[in-house]
Image (cartoon, rainbow, N blue to C red; front, side):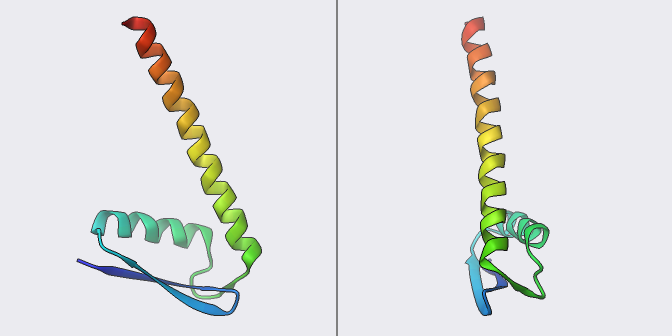
Length: 75
């Protein structure tokens, strides 16, 4: 099933088509946390949200690498 998420960035509406329901729900929650969905969002808001998400991914990668290192020590 295909879902759509709409957001206004820099006075322009943008529609994002999502094919997977689980990811669509996850993305919708993320977008509503990061943006004012009913309002116009500036490029700065978008940039800050992107940097925040990249930082979250960085922390996850660091944690994953630590876990893998511990596993390697056990083997």
